[in-house]
Length: 186
Image (cartoon, rainbow, N blue to C red; front, side):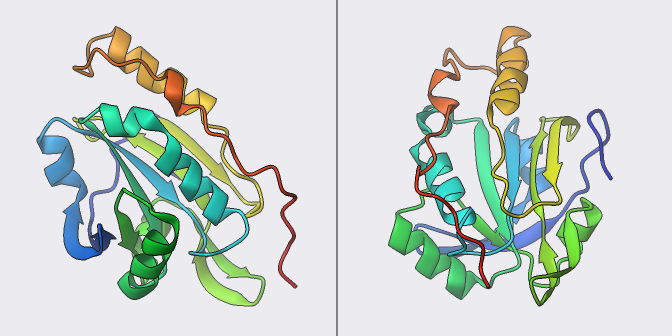
């Protein structure tokens, strides 16, 4: 599994943002001086993924910090991503890892989960402009949403060390997940 300090595996995936398909290249984004936050998740419209993606949408930090890019990655098609993004007004790219090779390269792929084969696990990776991993979080439990405060701390460290050129703070990165209990699919 890639760990903090490792070089992030490079990739280019097709994704959807604002209803349109585009190709997203990690190396192109980082070469342009951006930090990229990769949010791997099992599936669009699932019980934990929906509030997680909505919390990212509601996090003003990403909106007001132009060189920190959140990218959601799952095995869903761009058609599913488009419907998911439209239904929940998601304002960041959702990338389609339909053959799950990128999830595999980040070591966040289930062989089988609830009867589905080769589904991405939940994971968060902060990639800096040199394509180094500055923060890594993964879970084998698909029903556990990531705690974003350690990501916030890693971003704060980058801001304080001037690795990240912005006057913004990360105070608005603390997400508020839906308080409704999450039921497992049967």
